[in-house]
Length: 271
Length: 357
Image (cartoon, rainbow over all chains, first blue to last red; front, side):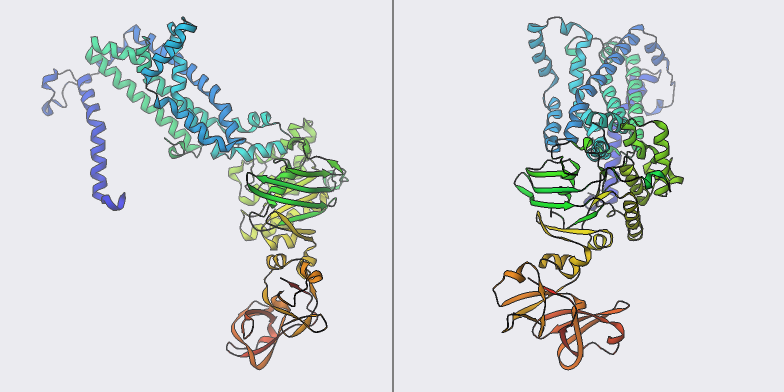
């Protein structure tokens, strides 16, 4: 890469990539935070009339806080469900049956191969016959999100287990008299906290940003609220969207930093 | 001295592997292993990678189950007993300390699991910290310790529960040379004081010879020979053993008219699995450099190189019949030799037996 592209080529590439990400956000920010009619948002008005009124207006909506509350509860439930579903098999495969690892890894990627619409239609068709009430509740989103978060959670856990050499640790603990379950509780889990936090952080970010499932199942979560709100109040909606994006990015950065401190680079996460 | 170190080693016992076989898929790791270890003995399993020595150790620890055969300790069959009920201590190659626990808590782990009372734990751990010279590092976490310190914590952790058998898997291979030698002697000292039966796996013949009561040389899933270091060196059972424990020359051996074997023009005593039964008249013999004697001569082997090793000098010779040949001679007797000169080569009288290959 370096050889063929050269130093200057690399910089051009990075600058273009940066612009590709930054320009739309700058446009969003100007639209949301400048008290200037849209048609006049040219280079000459760049520094005039910046204000956070629009954000204040958006934050004053009680429906926002309700939707945020729903999303927060969904995030907590989803994190709990993914960890309960995934921690035992991931540990089992790593410690007892490493040859099954490629299969588990592949299985956790399946959700990304199935489009949300197909998943929703399929699950809806199944549950309408079996448990008609299931999809009516907002909590019905949790299993969808849990499935959707599998690849993140699995990779975070797998990287953590490999980094601590889980298999030998369990062998060491059992040779000292622990049962396998005892070794998992006394030795593995305390050394997996960073991975568990990372998995939780990634899952939370995912839930706070997920739109397709919630929209298809007609639930009011933070992302669907954002879309609705934007339709009625374009500027305030844009301000809110930008704020949510920045907060999510900061939360993810905090997770990455936490992992680095524990000696787990982002590369080992396979993301 | 503390009661930990002076208490009679009541739990330690002899270990026996009888006809043990282990395969992984289509790979045969152990073909048929018989091994008897006496109580209190330190046995090294020595061999190249893939010889089955680590598999043998993992079978003893209970991490693997044999396909066939029996493992006993003190005469009791433990073949199917899970690791946690065997009560063995194990030291791993990569230390495998628990990263979230201090040195002290690592050492105490086995005692905690056994629900030993707090006072006994404190006393035992303090003693072990003393014995392994770790007292000042007691409250450090593994990532704050050096390699040698980690390995000493691992050793202390393994012996804290007074195991009936101590298993060490390449315990020194991750350390640098100086620490390795020091820790090797520490392991030996502690093992002697505790009187615990010990099996140590290594691929380093120098380590095995220095530390072991007996060395078991393994190759391709089989036992080649088990003997004391001296016996192994002087009377190797096979050419593989001779080649693995020390440097060797391979030269031709011929049978004389009276049936005795002649090597480098001298009648020699031969040992090894071929010596007794073989009917051939022409073989290869394995001769160590220090068994080769040289004397100045107008013709014969030519000196290609001289390397001064202190008390001895190693000569690299080019022999007209045998090709390249190594000879270790006392430095004072080889001071006059120069590269390019010729010497007469023979097996030194009284230099011990040679093995047929």
